[in-house]
Image: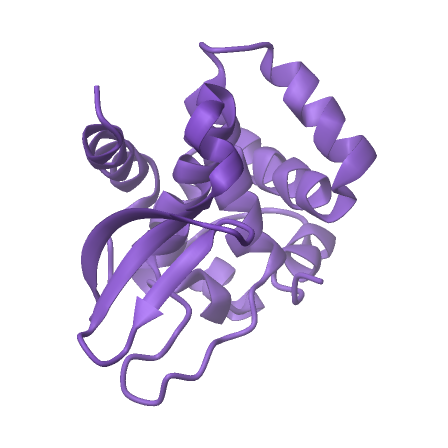
Length: 181
């Protein structure tokens, strides 16, 4: 299976779990770069690409982990198409992407090893994953419900949890909507 087919499968799976893509951007495909994985915006054409690190080219687990993570960001891109301003990312946004990355690779490796690695080397991603895992343990459809109220995860407020009828502790809500560092 080629990378575009994997990306298409991941997009369908992510939409099933978290709701449909909401974007004015046109998905353009997957590319590789010398940087960290990210969404690469092309404002002059209105396209957005999933940009993976060179490391992912020769590492199946990295490829799928990075691809799954960026697919979730693709569901609700953070750059405004008209102003080209990037929104600040929240723990909820990064947590959903990290959660889906671990979901995507669970058949390829011991996902608990990946979680432990995150805890040791990327604690903010671990914390965001942990909080989203807690949220989805309480309400498996919480992300879908929230995105009906506000499709862009970075714009979710504490009031949106009430509107979406997602009942979780206030402390967890507060942590999820904080800006990711």
